Image (cartoon, rainbow, N blue to C red; front, side, top):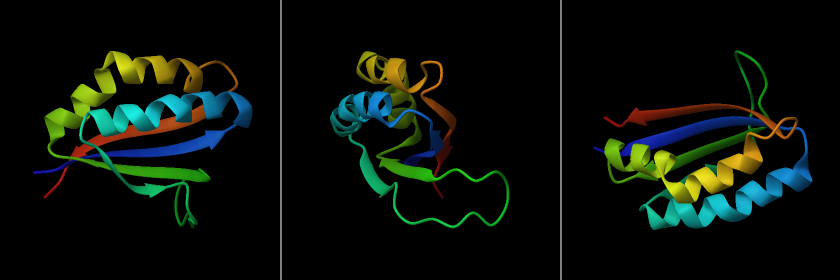
Length: 96
């Protein structure tokens, strides 16, 4: 079964967040991920509004976890998680 990373993001500092995005994309590809949704048009019907939404498909749940815990992605996360750069909800889920 596929694994999916579902990320909801509010970007507070676009210049710093761009540094994250530049590193995150190649890391996704390295671990077999494929972007299914990436910051396109969205409509929040319930819960807090997050203007940037991302869904990444991986071959399986373990691949998604391995990606998130990888050194490559850790380097990208330093930019996204820096104070004042973004607020994020990140969930890894197994497909059906």
